Length: 460
Ligand code: G6P
Image (cartoon, rainbow, N blue to C red; front, top):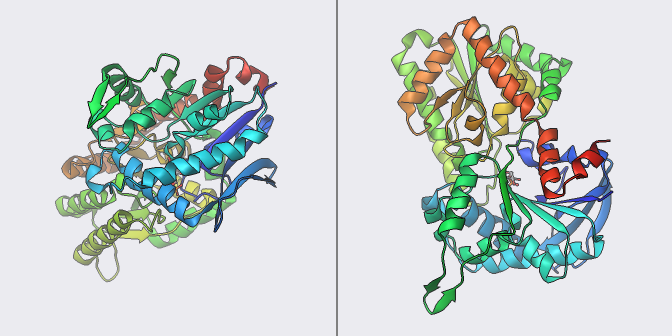
């Protein structure tokens, strides 16, 4: 039976609690042969040619260290200051330093070189996310003939945003060297297909650019999910109950509106707090009866745009508190730290409203986890951005345009006033979709399309 090799920037055990990637993939290697390859989290003076192999909680993990300079250009630079903002259609927040591209390629080449000696000819390789787009090219240049799949966890951009990325043609040629490319949503498949069909041979300055041949690359949407059964169990666990008890003691019977997001400009946090501000301004009856809890663990905080988002959010939260607080009541709590899954499951379960309003998002697993954590007898309401991949599978949510704070504020009012029968009916639809799109099936579907028959073999 073929082994599965997973490659991602972060390896398990190293990621922040709020990132969905590690949680989702740990399960894939749980019951099959293979290993996980990625960055060790360590920075060194010299580039490291060979991977270190370790057992991390029963998983075989092969890791390489990166030099500080390469890591900066690859991670904070090209991946998170160029690709991340462009793919999220925030060109205004992109910093285009084209030399970062060299560091990005160097790290991908280093990964390929360290991975190559560990591979067997029939290993199936599954590469994850925008940090590693060139990896298949680099592996193929070293002679790898394995089946190699790529999964993009973030949205695929429109052609215009793609053109703003330095070396985008090379990157798209790299994409064409995968056997399978998976996206979160139909929206992303459509954007990719649009680019693939319309790009043509062209000249750029003095350079002639050939059209890219995507004919050997299979492309499809594989919407990722959570482990809904595990989350519903967790939400009824003693640790979750403890959190609920603690919250109830402080909130009494106020209705909780909950947001949980990495502190990232793509999450629409300032707009969200502004929508809440409008809710309080327009509905005085809700004051003292409602509370917003925003959990936002800091993320990528060496990057200026992330620091600015954090400052903006501080200012807006301060303004709302100053305006609406009373000596014995505060309208919101803003917590800049990560919580473990049991505590989060408790918070999700007690929240009357799950507020998930990214300006653009690949999928958004918080939406899935919120749904899975609800009490079937008294479920809360999901208010969800129509620009999250999750909107394609959760039509029973209250879908909003997150840029329109009036609309979000009105959705919040509707959610808070929604009768139990309607909440139950909507939640049943949401929970059915969360079960259908669970993370185990997601991985099996991707692997089975990449190498037909492997999913069957792996599930026995
Ligand atoms: C998103 C990306 C992941 C990333 C995670 C956390 O979910 O798709 O690839 O791991 O954010 O971000 P970080 O930069 O801390 O790895």
